Amino acid sequence: MFLGEFHHNLDSKGRVAIPSKFRVKLNEGAVVARALDNCLALYPKKTWFVLAKKLAALPIVKANSRAFNRFMLSGAMDVSLDKQGRAIIPEYLRKYAGLKKQIIIVGLFDKLEIWSEERWNKYSMHTEKNSGEIAEKLGEIENI
Image (cartoon, rainbow, N blue to C red):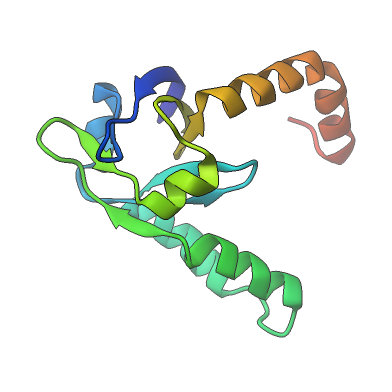
């Protein structure tokens, strides 16, 4: 299970050190992909496969299904960790997420998200400020 918030640096070659407690879960391979909210998601290979199958099952006759498939699948890239536990983030994904030097890695149960520090701080501040309202809206949908 991935949990927590970690501050890291992106090196000049586009590599990010994955927190050591998560590396074992990514040893069998990982996939980095665009995520919503202009961040990236890093999935263990098995988790990515389950998600990709669900995406592939969306109806191709619906424009929104095709668009979301393209968004998620076309930008995805297999990654592996080097001996220092670093993963290379492709340039086009760094650009999409606005990654510069300072980044935040966030554990979200079955995946990690990789954020630019600036975007994470804005997003986090907004979410914390509105957490009561967000929780109330979710309660209208389903009990958590």
